[in-house]
Length: 88
Image (tube, rainbow, N blue to C red; front, side):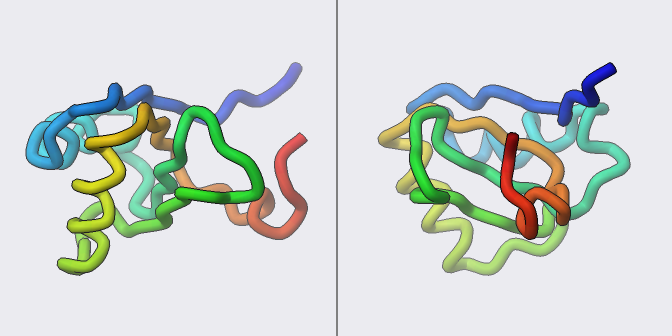
């Protein structure tokens, strides 16, 4: 048995409003407040955005808007052990 982190794909050019109002309200994120948004193709955490889904600073919102314009992203709950140990 291998646990799978709930994951949602956010296509490039998705508006921030759609992302915030629709994608983050999905059932898979219901139990999670801290999330991570990362480019589908990246290395060493480049482009990674960690955020609390109910509290987004203006700086984080702007970073997300810019990022969503340019790349496909995935969004997952923040798993603290991955931050410490890395992904396998």
